[in-house]
Length: 534
Image (cartoon, rainbow, N blue to C red; front, side):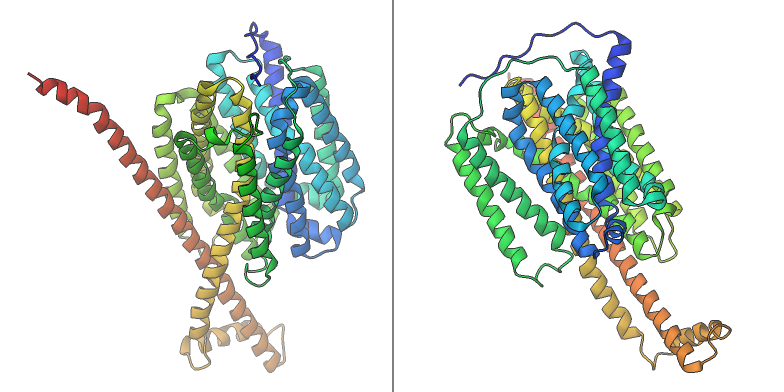
């Protein structure tokens, strides 16, 4: 089956209409980013509103993320067969309907169903954000301006959600969260119908086998997502089903690859995705996603352990969002294909510096003390992702215009999974290190240790005015000391994770330098040979 022909270039849009398309891209992208961020970053608060445990509420995140990661794979052929405009309009209508239905999610079961529907409805939105941002731009500005700005919008969603979440949850709980999502969905709906995307040639490409492959991929992605969300909660080995689910997920993805390799018109071109250049790019993006888990799963959870309220962290995350915007503007100013390695090297060094600064945290550390380090990491994230996306998009365009959207959709799916895997691994590491640090502290806190006795005496004396009973006062002093030891163990564990992040970034930077050195020597070798030839 022949691939759809590339659409003919259209004349540039007038500046006001081009700006409207770009604003629509920003609004649509931020809508899905806020929706995802409000779920992933506020599980304890959502659990309280629904009257369930945090463990049960974690299933809401899984229910949202699974279709959010898996459905874009099927959207490649849906978009080709039914047309881009119909794809955009139907996707945004479903998103608005689900947002409207979410207002009545007052119990856990309905919330779980609606989160799954929300993930399905949000799946096309990241793709729409890319398409609307690139639509009005000339070819030379699509990569230089459109790509960085789209990445700013998509990557800033979690940080912006942490800025607005305390006000929304504090004023009206989940109701205001759902009303905000509904309002943004309705505005997105208006923008999509007011600003139609240019038509593309349609072709009947969906086959029955596509649904089988999609189900296999969806089960594989879903199994991995559930395992890495629930694994740290259940300490991985406490329940047997997590291991069985991971094994079944790997088997399902393996079977999907086997089926795809033997099809003439597969959902995914596995051979292209498995080429050395794309595998290298995928590994780079996945490694960077793991490194960036320091910001998503590190500082916020450390402050949660230290008793810092979400409202006290809004300034920190506002700075992170601003730093991401500045990083995107830096890409707009200087991004070029030949500068991609330099951008990646600068990003890795900035992340290493920021993580090393975070590793100095103690139990008295507060959000304002991490503003500089977290801003460096947020800025570095935007120095890394747009150049990496540029490399992937250029590889896709070299293969053929029809591969452009395929790469975007595969990128969105893998980044969704990478974020969950990175957070799960980061949480697992900190939990393990916390247990080790707490064991060491517990060995030091003995009744015969003079420093322990002095600490208990000081705490008991401070409680004398509030607790007259000496025995109760001693028990409370001991409880406070144990609580401080636990907090110290957690902070030390996060410090270890920050140092591990810095080490990984430095190792990646060293590997990149060696790669650049090898390329330099390979380029200079013919020159030296020609100079020595008589």
